[in-house]
Structures are given as C-alpha cells and as structure tokens.
Image 1 (cartoon, rainbow, N blue to C red):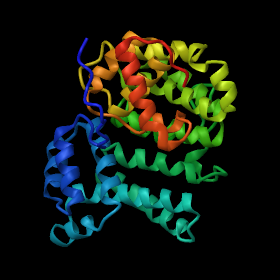
Image 2: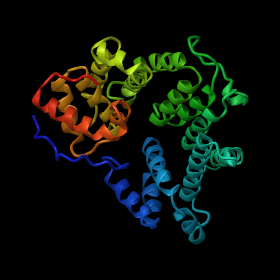
Image 3: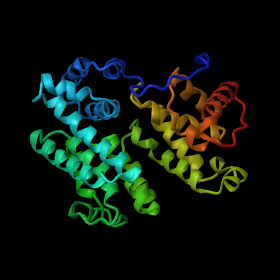
Length: 325
C-alpha cells in the first residue's frame, strides 16, 4: 500500500492536469496567453476540451481577463468559446441569486451558445452549455426541452441537446452530469431513471460509472440526517453496490483518467460503506489532491468537511471500518 499523502489536501480545479494548472494560475494573475496556447493544443480532443474550458471559464468569470484578451486578439476562436462559457456561468449565478438581470443574462448566454455551435459545428461544448442553461427553463417552455427520449422509461426533456453533445463526443462527462442536475431539479425519480439507463451502457473504465455515487450523496442530503446515520445508508442497497461497481470500473481505467471530483466521490462511498482496502487504493491514487464535494455535502457542517475527509483517509489507510457518513 502506498504511503499516506500529505495531511493537508490540495484543492485545485485543474486536478491531475498539469498544463491546465499552469493556465489556471496564469488566468488568476491576469495572464491569458497560456490559456490560448493550451486550448489550441487541445485541438479536437473534445472530452478534454470540455473539461478544460469548464475550469478555465469558472476562473475567468471572476475577473476581466477575457476583456483584456479580447482587446489584443478579438477574433480568436478559443476566446469565443470561453466567452460563451463565462456567459453561461454569469446567467446561472444571476438566476440563483434572483438578480433582476437574470433574464437578460440568460438570453445573452443562449445566443452565445447558438452562435458558438454555428461557428464550430464539431464542438460539443456549446451543446453542453445549452444543457447547463436548461435548468433555468423551469416550466420546460422551450421546444428543445420537450423532446421525447428514445427510452420509454424517461420523460420528455432536453434529450436533443444531450444527443448533439453525444454525437460530437460520445460519453461526454459534463453533458451527463448536466443532465443529472437538470432532472434533480425537475424530477428526482427521473434523475435516478436516467442514471440507471446510462450506467449499464458505459464502457468499463468510464468515469460515468461514478454517476450513481452523486445520487447517493443527494439521497443522504435529502434524508433526515438522523435516519441516514442510524440506518447506515452507505452499508445498505443500492448505495453499497453503487460504490462497489464504480470501484470495479475505475480499477480498469487508465491512470489519471478519472477527475479528482469523481475519485473523491468514490473514495467517500467506499470508506462510508466500509470497503476500506478499496478506499485506501483510491485515496492513494488521489495523492495530495481532493475536491470539496462530497465532503462538504455530507459533513455535519461545511466547516467540518476537511476534518471528515482527513478522518476518512486516515481510517481507510488504517483499515478501520468505523465510517458512518
């Protein structure tokens, strides 16, 4: 077994992606050239382009760095897709805050998505962005949110948007997570049905095998906490088997191919279900890296999240099956 990693976890949105980490740190300092070069080098690796633009946009949305970039290189295609990403992020944030600007920002973001889809027809990112915006259409008034699924178990929804993303990048991770978030807001049973339809079809090693773990965390959050703890949710079905199956899929994946967030959910699920040897293996693979979720979601309070993470990691390496959360 590998040695226990350093006590204090590292939370960095780039995770294992060293090149992305450099670009993120430069963006935070107001420098955009490494971002331009990174996205140009990413080319048509659509899955990586999706994840990298998501992370970079979350950083850029908190600054004026894209405006600075635009003054020097206004027609750069990498700048255009990041501007679309940032527009979507601003629309989602405004809607969550109840801002009077929310409607205008949503419309601007949608227009930017459609323009980006026309500009680079092979890029899945604009379609993933449209899926992200679907949660703002609560009455499902837009035609693109009323499509019938090819699976009769699933209700009408933004299936056409998912299909477009899938056509360009089969198994696109963010597209599937956006779809889960959409159904969690619209219909929790539909979210579970969607995951139950998707996961058996994904190839061994796919990070989409972690999707059920996100459902388990949501179930825990929505269950009266005393019931969830007393009943030891994570030792019961379907939660125990979800962790086991996700671990089996991860164990045949390429090293470093699962994002830190998915590995964090997997480590938590294995620890909480007392599968300590497997949990220790995942913690070892994470090394110094961690994501704040799911620990911030299952801890007694967000301020206790890191303590819970450190306890879980220590217990997993020690092989102590005492997990409760």
